[in-house]
Image (tube, rainbow, N blue to C red; front, side, top):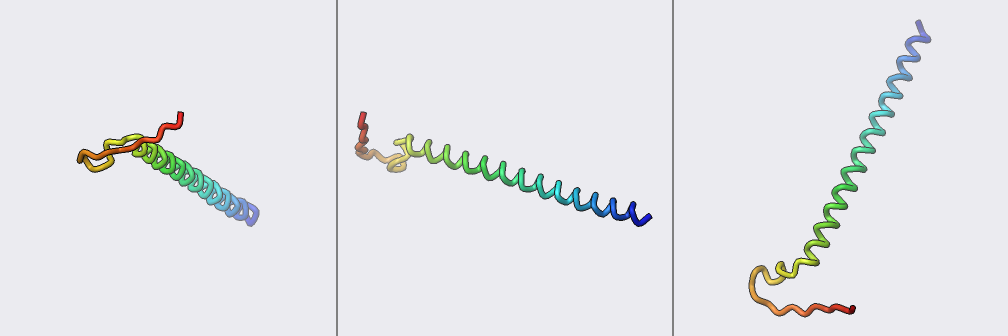
Length: 66
């Protein structure tokens, strides 16, 4: 009976480890998705010159090296 109880305790530890791995995996994926989305949004803002001046007519000088 003592052996059975020990195996059950190890099973709980294994279950907790598995849950921790899932938590780390899900958190990592969410962080990567958020970072990718923020990076994409920043690129979109850099390319959208209409955002400069909030709708007012402004002069914009664009440097195009090549």
